[in-house]
Image 1 (cartoon, rainbow, N blue to C red):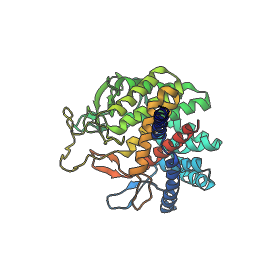
Image 2: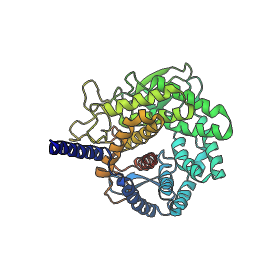
Image 3: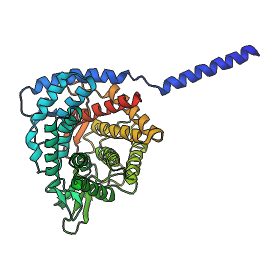
Image 4: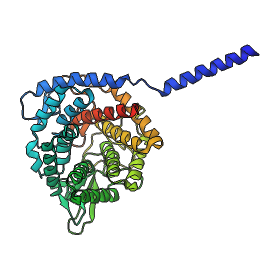
Length: 410
């Protein structure tokens, strides 16, 4: 009887140890990824050299894709370097980040599209956060003023592009894309450092209209909403980079999670927190999300009830491409969401942890141009950047690793 009891007790202990070990994955993958990123980014920095351009991706020819500063992705490479400095505390990265950020200086007065937030806050925003350089603060304030020129008062939104068309041919004269939520952080920052609520009020107005018109009842998201700037009404709902007008473009869902989480952080208005949670729930519970947590480029590709308008060739891709960039954005947003929610946010933390490990295990870049991650999709309907490395995937991956590392030691 005693032996039987002892055997049962020992078996229970072993089961407990086994269960515990399954729930506590090896955290070494963070340091391993930082080491890999260090090697990759040193090589990429060397490839960039003295060029005034910045790396974005790899061209179909196999050449490094370098872009001018007006490209919407120009701020991500300096941002990557700032994150490398934060992750390693190596002044090599600080100097490199300062040099690459300097290229973007003229953009503080850029007003041609809404992406000045991406361009300047991912670069100079991180630079100011890490160095408290007063020059950077002034540059960011000017950038916020430039972004504010795109605010359309009657519609209550920041206009994304000056003109575009739906795949069906409908003219969009005041289109707003879901990505625009990410630019609001620059405006919140500007209000805090100037004590001028004008920037903050624009950001809140834009977030409210986005919640009203971009987010569907099931908390999926439209990519594009077109507005009439006189009546202020939404006049068109569609996509430029998703599968169909009524589908859920994966990166757009990632922008939504991240954007509304950030807006809650800056406002403490519970409606934004509820939105962030429900949008994240849609993402993590979607039946078409692959087991490894890395989404296809659109959640509804080839699904009944979703008709592509861009001449999608059903036979061109035997396997539906994943979008690693969508995963990194969503992961980073969910990690902040989990921090805000505490114990109530554990499911978002757990999901992010699993997805980070998937990226680390199966999606590292092995090509010739030293990015960190592979298998992102830029614009599938435009047949552009399909299953390639993208610099913004690397940016949000490093940000996610940083957030995960900070959370794991709390």
